[in-house]
Length: 167
Image (cartoon, helix red, strand yellow):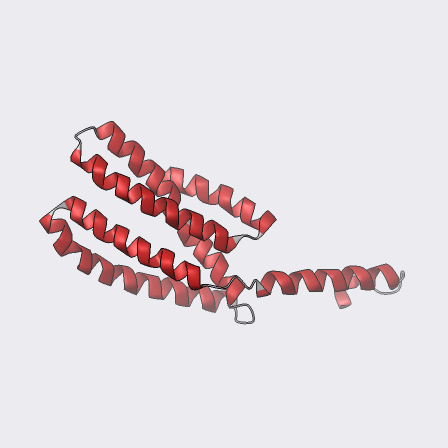
């Protein structure tokens, strides 16, 4: 399951480098995760281990890429700030939040594992709602685009004396 999620993360990373559609990708992954977690609660009721495994692999293919996508997206949104600071803060908050989410989920899992999974589905629904309020303002990409355009224009008119590394 983890290997499938990591492979999909790599593919999504390549697509994001080319198309820069962070928010659309995040919304699609979150929505698919919500649908698959609802299906997971239904497949848990069956005793078909193969069906449960396939569902969990597909679910991991949607949930695992959300982590690197979020880190890259946060670097874009918080651009003038250092990437390491933004990523470190995001990971630190994520670790603390996951600790509290696991404590909140435990009583539901003790009732019934499917209820615990539905609770996680409710949290995914909340994250989908939050993603609707986010405005995609890719400051870092816009700055890199402006900087590369300025370098190419300067290097085209600078002649042999100057190098673009000075601009």
